[in-house]
View 1 (cartoon, rainbow, N blue to C red):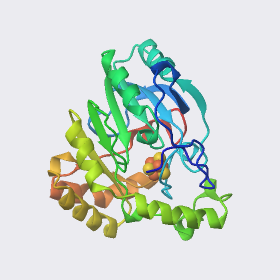
View 2 (view 1 turned 90 degrees about the vertical axis):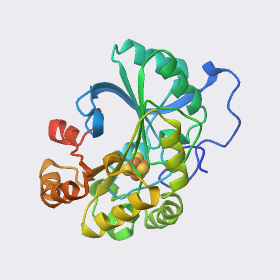
View 3 (view 1 turned 30 degrees about the vertical axis):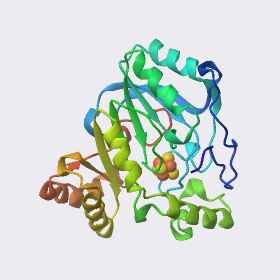
View 4 (view 1 turned 120 degrees about the horizontal axis):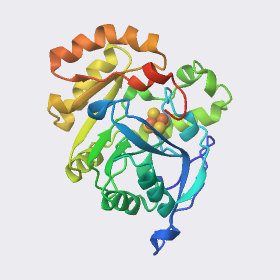
Length: 269
Ligand code: SF4
């Protein structure tokens, strides 16, 4: 298990260690904190306080938050500051996202404390790690084969042009070994009050693969949310033309990325 944020070169930034004994000593690398509306899934439109932790144990080629994965940028915040910031936002909903928020030391205590002060907690995760966290809504976005950061795919992405080829190759191997952990997904679902499982779909082969994943996880169709791949409103609409009817036929939710329609693909949304 990767226990610390990883730079684009695959170097672990934090060494594994036991959690500090005192809650106030816990620090988290935060890439951004903002108030916005939830753009995806069953809480779409709900005003929420977002805490995005920087660092991910995967490297999806299509990642729309590269500042929290391929090129993590962060400032350190204490657990108490994060909780106080959530309280001060005056919003009832907190979304803990990334990157991969479940890879950080002390995440159990952060999630516990956010809930203990009476806030509704959504955790957004790829579901590759399963620490003992409890969420009001566990929002899983498992990564299937279409997420692999192959050189061919990464070279198509303008903001990833600076990544050296050996780094891409190393991440392709790591990504493939880590991305699909059905037991972790099932534990996270079982441990939380509510859950949703979102898949990004780009083409028909990926759609068939999602059907296989849903069967393997033994999910009810109503638990499944399908998001079209795309970082522009035009790209999303093009995919939606065939993905929406496919969802309707299988009973899956079609999950548009409203934040891209509302704000475009940019930080702080
Ligand atoms: S799991 Fe999420 S944050 Fe991590 S690389 Fe993939 S899309 Fe980006």
